[in-house]
Image (cartoon, rainbow, N blue to C red; front, top):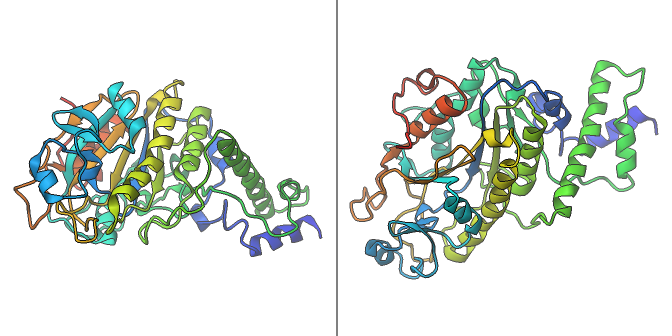
Length: 407
């Protein structure tokens, strides 16, 4: 079988669709991102971590000293002795030991009560609101896509390591790039050396065939990196659930963050990275399940932040972690919680002043059983746009003038 025929066979068999070509016109290979090494404009880097499913904020940043918390959640609340204490009667979920250590080092900022007016409890609509930064009416562009429009439109400036490009990276005239990762599953009889051979361009290749060869080579490169992640002690969880219908199936978070770290340390031009973790829609038997899911966030994220603190490029990174909504204050009859409203948002990085920010929402002055938000998420976005990406927030956020400050 000649090289080109083999390439066609593997493409038809879905191997490339599982890797560098998965998202069509906006799909790039890892080599395309690394090829921009040394071209990054001065400025900081944003890594956005989306938690799909609606993470329970009250059992993540826990108001253990508030009697109303325990009264609303008998059997689901955490006692004082179980939480990882922060300050002012607040603690972190026991599954967040790594983030708790970063808080103690002054490198984790927790913004409480983050939400938006007239909250929507639909996964789809609320995530759309967060990703487009348009609570009042549906929007056709994402907030970081609009930033990309103003930053020159090169897709490699805003990269997702998820299976499909998230709406937040879609602009009016441009869109970010998606570089799918994860394990590479080859058809029977196709070995890694065979795949490597297919990545060697032939002299007679047309530009399109040369591009196909580059994609096969990139699959091997990503696979080698993922093998290195596993060798470092991080095993992919075969039972990882999809990120719910709003997010699709993403590779394990440690693998996504390994790719981000590789690009950052190489000096890639990318200014924005998007990664995700799903499985937070826990309507029943929540306590142990959420703690386990938070552990899947904690270990990779703490390791990522610690690793990047060791390099000059890494110290330019700010990480923001959010979910489409929190959960209702009162537990349901199935030892879980239903879709709610405001929640906590996490910010990490060497340049982030750690601490607790934002007024904690009252657990007794509720709106139809839900928390009233005290910080509009657009205030956080405005801070990230201005202080991290060096952009003017108002035109990107539809004239929004608020901004989070760390004072």
